[in-house]
Length: 130
Image 1 (cartoon, one colour):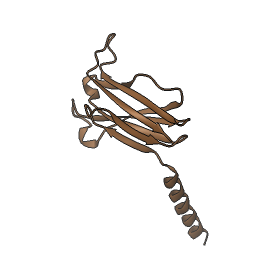
Image 2 (spheres, rainbow, N blue to C red):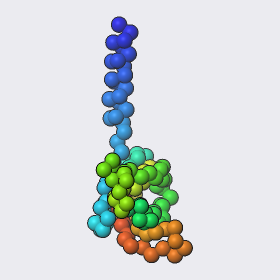
Image 3 (cartoon, rainbow, N blue to C red):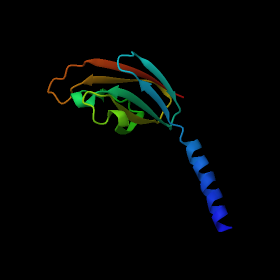
C-alpha cells in the first residue's frame, strides 16, 4: 500500500513540476535577422543560438537591461556533432525577467578572445515582458 501511495505521489509531483516549468525558448538561426519573444514577468526564458565554437567564434551578449537577469550560459551539442571540427553547437542563454516592459538583447558573433574582435554577425532579440 505504501508503495502505491509513493508512486502516485511521485507521479503527481512530476506532473506539477513539469507544468510549472514554463520556460520559453526561441531558436535563433545565424543570420536570420531580428526575432521577437514574449515572456512573463518573473518567469524564466531562454534564447538558443547556433554557433561554431570549434572555430573560435561564439555569441556574446552586448548589454543586459537592469530588469533582466542572466541565470546561466551553456553549450548544447548534438551527439552527431561531438567530434566534428567546424560543426554546430547551440549556445543557450537563460534569463529571468523582473519587470514588465519591452527590451532589446543584442548578441555579437566573433572571436571574442581577440583584443579587437570583428563582429561577423549580429542578432537582435526583442523581448516583451508581460
